[in-house]
Length: 57
Image (cartoon, rainbow, N blue to C red; front, side, top):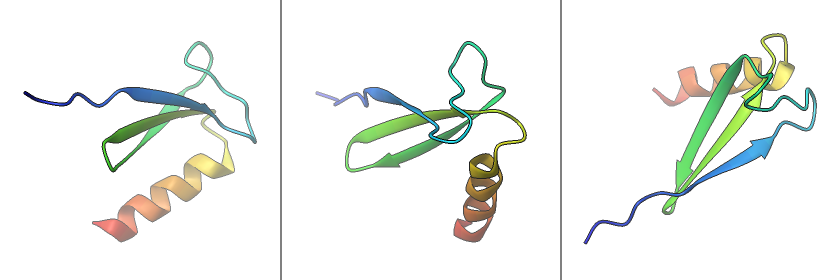
């Protein structure tokens, strides 16, 4: 009936944070997929994700 999105955890190539030690996460959806990326608070990829998210809204 309903297709559930199966999350895929992606390791940030810069800070290498995981669910166990990451402070924040970013989510991305598209074409029936959901990816979760954990980041350290000072990770530049996390800062870039926040900037991009503000531009999309």
